[in-house]
Length: 111
Length: 137
Image (cartoon, rainbow over all chains, first blue to last red; front, side, top):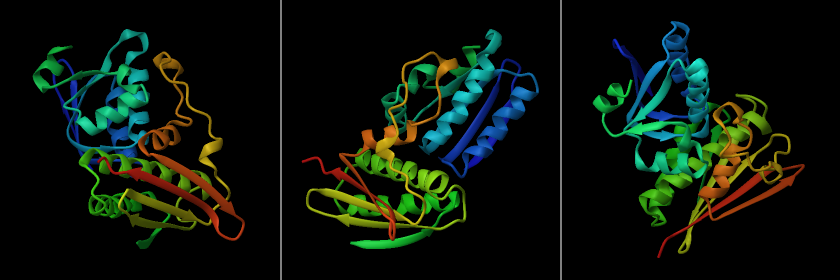
């Protein structure tokens, strides 16, 4: 898995590729935490190149969502979630914790 | 039928995933079912490392795949302490964000993803988890 972060005026875009599982989720966690620790709470997570995500990955996202939404200071939104991932996310009811977009411009524009 | 033993480390997870995906394809499962098998096996292996072994590098995870006419059977064996996923209660879902807790989601997902989940434990053999995914006709 690769993770990149790009800082924009309105928000930060985090993009990962490949598998997010118990072995790689800590790297995603690190990327999200460093944004939150810098006092930035509006995050777009671009999942267009993520082809697998286990529950460990979702916990990282849920944890970041809790931190960002606190005091209504921001939130994590998801872009281009692949169908298989989205179905498993919905199956455990976690899909409801995130706004999802089909293109990055709309996601960035939501802030 | 084929059996491969993987080190009980998180870096083994993609390799286990590839191994079961190949067998699922051979068994004639569709893409959605192949993803379901990969996800269920990934959650099961993460639980073996976290709960049966209590950490990485403590033992092996043995994975057997049996492609059949009806679908795919995956058998996971470890030598760790007893961990019966059937004893893990369903997580509380559809609760407010602040209240959601990680416990039990992986096991719940594994049950939902597969058509059958069976568990056995023997003091000599450790944990045995048998997963079955039916082929859509």
